Length: 217
Image (tube, rainbow, N blue to C red; front, top):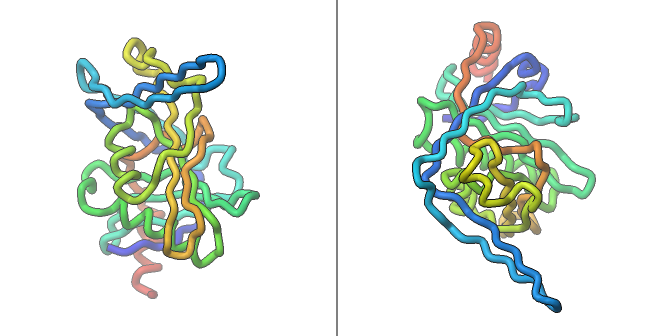
């Protein structure tokens, strides 16, 4: 398996479908008692597995200058990661996509390594991304990779998630790295990376171009 830098324009017409299933979620409880705020993040179980599916254009308009890497086994695409430099010397991860048949193969970690290495060599001070509080598998992956909690998008975090599967909430995490990045964090953009598990396929032109690049390496 190897990661290869891709031309973002080659992804401009791709529509991806992502899905995930989660048996747990984090419920945010905020209380204000005169002179202090209390914030609790409680891990709870859904009464039945929560399943979310959504399709979207890979290069949404808000991704102004995306950088893309793909994970490949020979000519087979296993997944993609898109990220972008921000004004405060941060590297925002917009998407980390692992195709359904390629899960549990270390693809996600390989893609995250590509973003981390790019941030280090570019002198970036942190990585940033967002996921949903109901996407327990994604949260577990990010925490295992070294990310830690940074904040919340509170308007969309409510136990309403139990009543309406579409009201999934935002969850933000951050961490520190000793590998050249002073601070690695995950911050909120409501539209950003809700995505962790996806399914999609390459066009024949995309595949031919990538195979040609691999053979010339």
